[in-house]
Length: 150
Image (cartoon, rainbow, N blue to C red; front, top):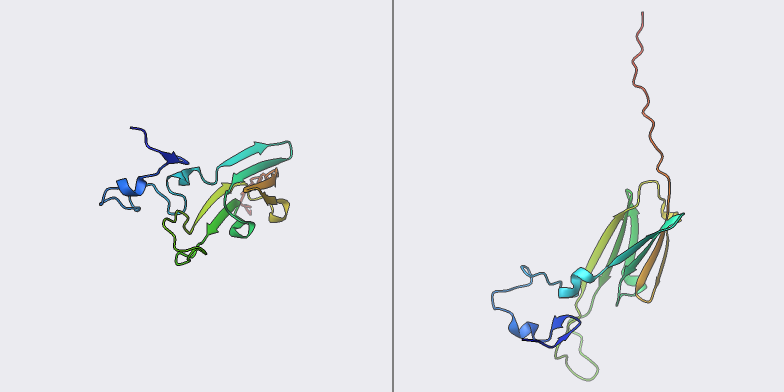
């Protein structure tokens, strides 16, 4: 039987849930429902001098997104919050599908990459990052000889 849907979600999801099913055991995110696995989709392109990342963050504002470089990992996080008690200007809400929550993702970029070398730009719901290619300093194994006197 075909069910009407919007964005891949069944319109009757809430009515058809079993009483014992809860969000702890299901694969639903309170922020994006069944579509949570499709959030923060990332395209990575390699150029001669850098890696270019394009991360989808639809519905977020620049102020709700953070990027941090720590121990060779680039960590991207986004969080959103809505006031659940808020009333609409024309009355009460019948259904609210937008919730507060956060998500994050990390990428190993190497310990030689410095924070000031990474360029970031956010526009039209896409976070674009440019991470320069940096040659890792190869550690030369110093001989561990012990001097013998005599």
